[in-house]
Image (cartoon, rainbow, N blue to C red):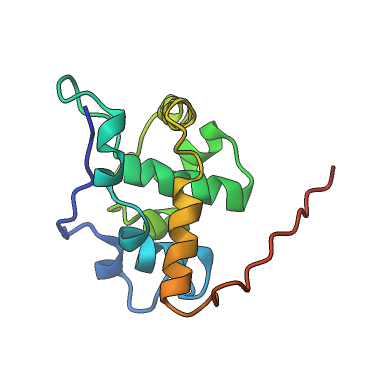
Length: 150
């Protein structure tokens, strides 16, 4: 069953406890915090889940975790730890201070679910559409370059 993030602000939200922003607004953490809700939502993954059973960890949350994992070059276990203790990740994922996060196996299961349903490119394609809508990328000006070291 599809799990959902709670959009309700609580007393334990990080923004309440700090005068200044914890992350720079133009960093990946700040951008994900600001645009993450428009980028990806739990409703985007309804067809991947049964309508019965125990709710999963939020698909929107795990999608954002995958982006942060790629950016920070960390393993599933390290992502679990960062979601618990790293304030940058908590800001980016919009997790309250007391949130314990998720088990690292949830990431693996979610990644498998994406691959089996051919939705592994969904977040990237959504990002490109948002960037075009915002005028960051002009139509026809996108060029893909393979910059891998292999």
